[in-house]
Image (cartoon, rainbow, N blue to C red; front, side, top):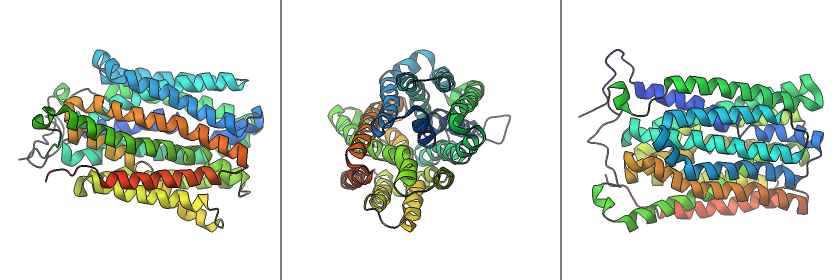
Length: 412
């Protein structure tokens, strides 16, 4: 029996309003707040004379802030509610992005981008918790996928907008980029505050999905075995750490690699990045749907295999034509893992503990993100190329394939 009842005054279930508003939130807090950095870095480096190591540390600083926020986000959301926490987090992202526009030194940018990471974490973690409140197991993957598609839209926009603003404004165009994108984030914060709701009961409705089809591995029976639950969460966390430490190296340095190692212009590199964004719009919904049908374990086996191929094609420095294949594989897979993870924690632990569980595995994810850019930047400074860094990413995602194989199967 389906309990996907609609709100009394409309034929559209309010859960879909939550999902598409969530897509706008992700577009702002992660898509613009984090993934626009890769497009902005070449111009910032030329303007401020940044080394590869410092470029990597700017990305790492953002993830340090994000990791701090992850540690406190579930507690803050319990006191303020997810809706207010997300709105305040977005405001923090928008204000600090605008302030980067006025920075004159590396240390100022690093500090501000750490605070941007705090705002991103305060927005993202409670939002992923809302997935398990508004959607049952057979619909969670699709809902999380819709939300994560906001990242792809932001990457597409940044890939087209940043080269254009740099052409219009010259060497200081990156400053205008930070300012205008920060204003967009502020606008999304206002929208999110008006549309998000903490629970279906706030709209006098029930979650979307089929109750009988929703077999939750983390049932009450499993709650009596905290050791089993902890093992599953650590297992998911280790996989998530490998994703965090690798995808961000590609996101941060692929444009720099295209410009410095392959000799592409910034405009052409931006077009490559826009292709990643366009493909990644479908990444979350596609693999969310796939994991709803085939299971979270199978979904992760597929996507980490795609990542391994994508990183390997760049790491072994094949002719430029192979970059198209690498970028296509990365783009179609990039938001699949957060989508599957957001659904998996609800499956294993249930809605009441989903936000806290997602926060727990995101700590692993954050540690991977902290280590990845800094290590990749250091290796590039030492070797003069990112080939070793992408080779390291290939080995890490191959390890994630093996770890995914040993995930517990969900009961039919």
